[in-house]
Image 1 (cartoon, rainbow, N blue to C red):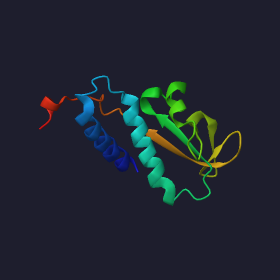
Image 2 (image 1 turned 90 degrees about the horizontal axis):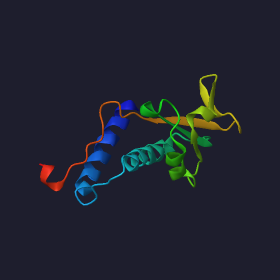
Image 3 (image 1 turned 45 degrees about the vertical axis):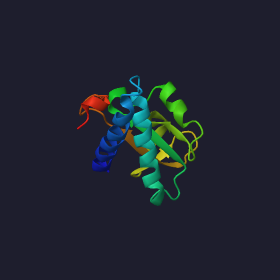
Length: 122
């Protein structure tokens, strides 16, 4: 799964760097959102019985900021901060609803996102 995250991150970054020249103010959180949504979609095959997704990220030290969470306000299943989860018997549950969940994490510790212009591309 970790390898998938890194590959997804690189692919999303590569796609977005093409447009970075036109939108120099590209939002790094847009890349994180794309990667997370791809992970949600890829988990659909194993998510039977899953009622909630939790997200975390290394640079946020656990919970994403509220502004980032608002990007997932209408997601089905709902997306919550990782602090709303609890582990029990090797499974993840929502503390409030006791729905089964999956934790997703975007780890950008390998370096910052660098936006390239068209002239920077090979």
